[in-house]
Length: 251
Ligand code: GDP
Ligand code: MN
Ligand code: MN
Image (tube, rainbow, N blue to C red):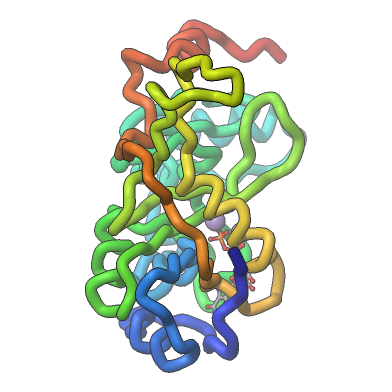
């Protein structure tokens, strides 16, 4: 398999036809997977806002005040308000905001970005990243699209690319029922291939001023496996999240 960045994409603005820009910049093959950074999907979809678009509620102000006290940095209550508006549930109020978005993704600050947003204060994630992926897919001569974001994760330092939306392929390869090299039937292995593709693509895209938000994955095959579309865990089967919901930050 081979990964390469789509060259020469401009700064993306609201209303830009991202599919046409990508299609013009690269000769896509039908079995390519296109991985696109959510940043440019959001920009094209008009998800850039200013802090003043989020007049803070008393709840947002209380959250920001507590975070300011804990971190020793001035936290903007308008930013807390934006995070609250983008979230269906607040999992951690301190020492940072960890929330569940409407489409099921759990991330710090609801995935709201302040980098690579030249004309506005904030960039929200796409409202429905899998629908964004589907729209791109319909307009491109390929079948498979993954929308990525850079995210931290528990238990490890640093951030990495993850899939927040996908279209045209299953989220996972299900190895259950297949046999390992000892002939033992695998009982639990479900390989989340969209996260793996997102991580590989993010390695090429980078995080800074590179200007390479779209990455083509060429000659990668899902293979002859069962697929599943499970990606974001439901709370009922997420025991780590359940534990977190009982936990309180103590300064
Ligand atoms: P995120 O991981 O989706 O939050 O996106 P990043 O901000 O990390 O950006 C990923 C890549 O896309 C980096 O190479 C950025 O330089 C690039 N990028 C971000 N916005 C734009 C844009 O509007 N146009 C172009 N050409 N590249 C961009
Ligand atoms: Mn991001
Ligand atoms: Mn990134």
